[in-house]
Image 1 (tube, rainbow, N blue to C red):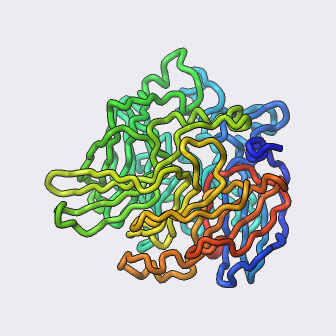
Image 2 (cartoon, rainbow, N blue to C red):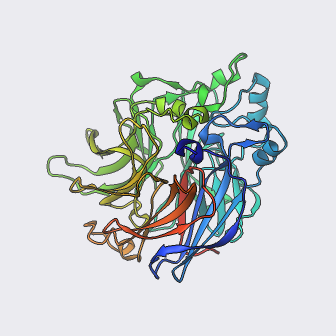
Image 3 (cartoon, rainbow, N blue to C red):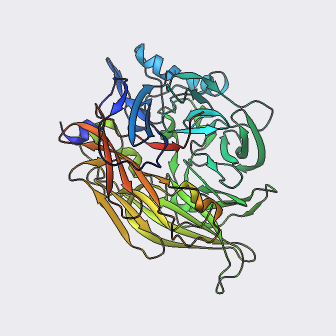
Length: 483
């Protein structure tokens, strides 16, 4: 089976067992990596049309005393049960809707719940998330689906929610935003003391809201990167307007890309500089740096993976992916410097070309980081990533790890200890002391492995063989302990 087809097959087996390990898993590595993504694209005669719409499945790798155990399980959502009963709901890029269905969906129905993007812990609750304000709680031990979780209280709410929450590691505060569609649409930014509570930070009124998959957070600021991929909400309610969610958005490069810089304490928008048009799914990290002599004023540094436009979305349909028809422009890791104060300025710098799903150590969230980890891709993309890369943002050096023809998922860095949570130096001397975890698809064996890579040397320490091939998924989180 070609790797294109193998990585986008439907997995229906649910298992729980100890995995055979080759090499040595560090004895300090203790906890669980929980990954989320599509498990099945078809049930019987019905199926989805886009990679982003695969039915949510969790995969948990637990590390203890050098051993690795594995469990996977579908999230039994309404979307999952509907597909099992022969009807696929319209999702991100699957299906069409009528005017009546759109109005009913906005005003009467519960939000779409195929929560296949990421898993997060908020307080003591473990939640699977997607781009609606409807979360699904799961049992962290068994991965069993528990219940839907939505916010209580009268605070402003939206129709669209960012799936990528940001956590301030110093305070533990979770921050997120939602988009409310209307005659005047609004971006609502809030912090989350618990899974069911929100503290309103601010609301920003816009005429045409943008699609934003992630955002940036620093100790004092929230930054929304408003790409020129926008929708006129009134178009959603016009007869004859059909298509899935993402088809309602339009690319308008003449608008440029705008950064909303929001003071976390006051809720004030302190700057909104624009630069030339670009698009992106994933912010890597952001922090506040000391003022430079040649550029006085407070400076925000925002690392972001960018692409020139939204063409990549159309290349991720299942038909094209299974046929190996890629060819989209790969991501670029770019650094944006926003100087605040009198005369707001924005500078843009290319750090690395050919990246996907970039991450940093969780110990460096909201802080000055040196290393970024990502899938390494060719430019443009002609095949699924065959390597992981470690990017030194200070020197520009790129170190790669590969294993023949095998394919890799998003890399997750696990720090050996919490030294960097207490360090404000930002020198990066020990920032890479830890391991990188990634799921590798073995093309020839038609199965997957969990690979443990040393953070410093970027060489393999161990790998654990999974009994089946895991479809290419999206995002993971490492939890040092499960409640």
